[in-house]
Length: 379
Image 1: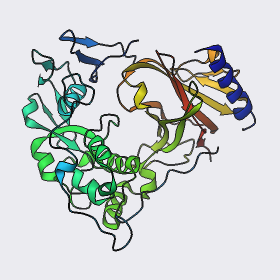
Image 2: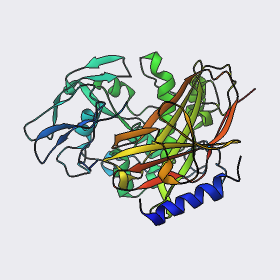
Image 3: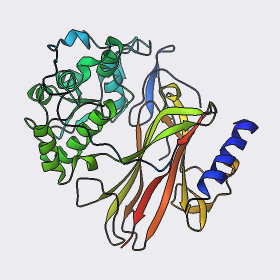
Image 4: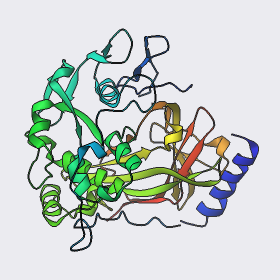
């Protein structure tokens, strides 16, 4: 981070907050932070330690204006086969298999195809070791996306949607039989046979639709809200767009803050001190910043001042100088969206603050929320 950038961020924190109360690698990593290196044919692991924000918009019902024309769905407009988007010889199917394997996956001699691993399928609750028994599921199927607004997209956007590796919720490895049972049906017609996954499933479904600006019809909304036990707007976290400090421009990164009572499916905008809650942060990075090591920062704006939150949850006084920021997480290798659990349990005390979320990469990028996200735990 150069001196100009540091000064710019310091000015931002002091002027805006105070007045308010590794190397790049191709391919994606698995849960252990491991991936193939095509150039050497090796398998490589990274050390992975453990304005006022607007309300999250609710997807609009319907698939366009009444009587609007939706052309017939043609799968070939979205994909004829999986793409190798990053040119490392591994297509989207195998990238997902590699990323999702709970153990280091076995690859073929060329490092292009996954031959074995261990996968948990949330749709069935089963564990698989043979990738031939798995399909890669589009959380929101292509035909459903087409009828929900994607039909109006250009061809590049359609194909990018079909191969979306940036959002970890978009594509998942599941039992082939469960995926084919689901087909193109939405939550009003199909839910996973594993009932314990219904809550997460409708949240993920809604998040993907929200992320891509896809419509939600009345039957789908009712089905989601039936599982969620709340309005569909509470299926996704409160969000803020990003600001790129190096480029001094808006960033495509998106940051989210969610409070969820542990006995409820939906997120909530406020909880009581006695509630058992989980507070989570989500980061959808700028696509230009993936395949790098990230430090993640949380800055709390409290009545007593500004504080960095370290990885143990301690509040460290922050004077607005970026050089003094304490990371909440260090050296996390990111190739797609990421979620962090910040707190689990009951606070047993009131906490009302605004939270800034940011990340820095090992190549000197620095992106943070363009507006703080409110967190309220109070009576």
